[in-house]
Image (cartoon, rainbow, N blue to C red; front, side, top):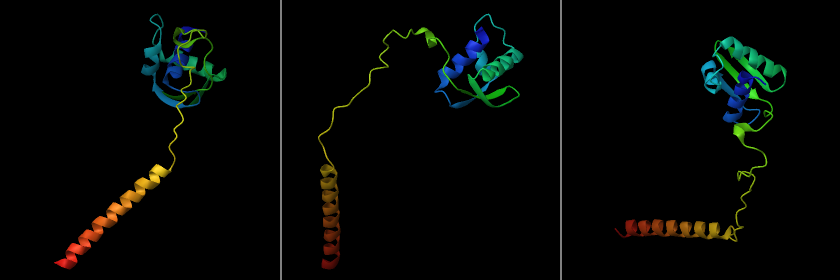
Length: 131
């Protein structure tokens, strides 16, 4: 895969999950281009059309220098140079300790709030009637 097509895929891969559409300008794509690749809008359009034809991208619309594209599948290879055998800690799943609390604490909190509110209203009513 040439540098421009690879840069387009890596830019979309870095933005988010596959299937999510992003509106990007040509300049946004040019930021991801390698140093030796020319910043040519025609080459970019050609690369996007080829990637869409191969099933890597979906282009919802394009006009001027703006593209609304979504990555349909992740590019082959290792993004950002991370080999699959390296453990980067992302595969570890956090499993929180199971809490023993039940909804009874919410019940008692609501009960205490209702009792406190009733007591305050009763005191106000009593003060108004005594005066």
